[in-house]
Image 1 (tube, helix red, strand yellow):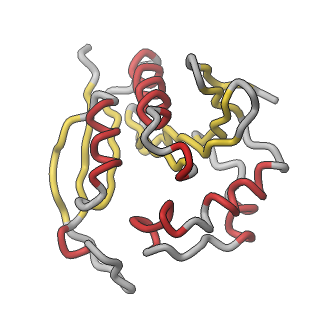
Image 2 (cartoon, rainbow, N blue to C red):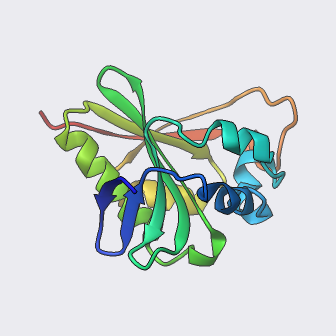
Length: 165
């Protein structure tokens, strides 16, 4: 197991084949997928194909309990997109903020100029995590959806933090 980062309560590590079942369970929870797919699960085959996406790590407790994943995916030479998806049983316990803050800090320390994140405008919990991680609101924008989900009409929001140097 290759550990990427540790926080007081989390380990961010490379994904392992055994994580596929955890990810299938995560992406099958309608509450988790509400603002992503309208609650529809991600097919297992898609999860298997994307298991080793660069810039994405499994999030587990120090005791080994699978919590979900975090990502800091490069989108340019000096910027990256922050992402996270956690099991609903751990929502409201500060794990998302803890992991996001740590990735933002590392990304900026490693020379990123800009870190951003996006979510649906109605996803207030995710917006709070972005703010607690140090990102600030930038804009609201609207996407064309083939299969719109509840809340799409209010648009998407983007948050960012810029390097001070």
